[in-house]
Length: 395
Ligand SMILES: [Fe+2]
Image: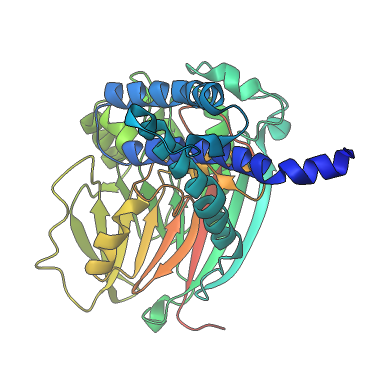
């Protein structure tokens, strides 16, 4: 038989085989993401991660051993007894790999950015080049930072302009420095943060918003003052903590932030006057710290800015009429494949809010890719610091 004719003959089987493999990987990835979106103990999540990693090759080998290159054999002849279990899994993989994954990927690629995002400009700073060496430091996972093409030291300094029709006219041009997921843990070393935060200091924003995961080791609380002490702002600075802060004496981190005059909101809200107009800033550290903030006595007409470590709190934000929500946590997935995008995203919504800007009435959500990470590994997903400019009009 001619090779092309042979290929065409076996194309459906080949497609099915590729679909089953892709579906198997996608199901495990979604499962791990959802586990990590919940506040389970660190050890339990670590076991889940190892288990899921192990199931990748074990599942593929098992499916190949059972059905070879022909997944259709799972249902032909119809399974009996326990054979129905792997047959149902094969069916799930086919649906996931050939229907859900392509549709979800197409929806992500074709997603239109919210009209409220007026502009988005990025300047990339290669800190390793500026310093003349890679600031690898002495973190537990420092060797990952040395991998070729790793973008962990190339930081995107981004300026995003949001049109918020409900913004008081007096705030037109108001700026917020959104910094998230610094993960002080030894890698990158302090000079990396000094270099980036010195640039942020020159932006002189009106407000500073820190959305959690600040300290990520038992030894690096001492970095909080020298690193974040470089920041400047005009009106006020606010912070909340994230899931990694929970593991390393969060009260110590809160005290250090307060020493820098950064108001640590926790699960509470505060009202202040900015340019003569009331602003309510709300912190939401759930699901790792509870209970959620109580907005019963919160003034209904004031502009509401929410700092939430995870974007998973977007349904809560919508229910409580939040105007602008700033989040981090997902790191953009840290490794983003061409077309497909992120894979590992610790969220109940899996990849849906991995990074970027989302408008879900009445809330505009900005999810930062963050500046650091416990695992210094970034491909096609550079660290990010964002200056947000608020506009009352669309011009
Ligand atoms: Fe983080």
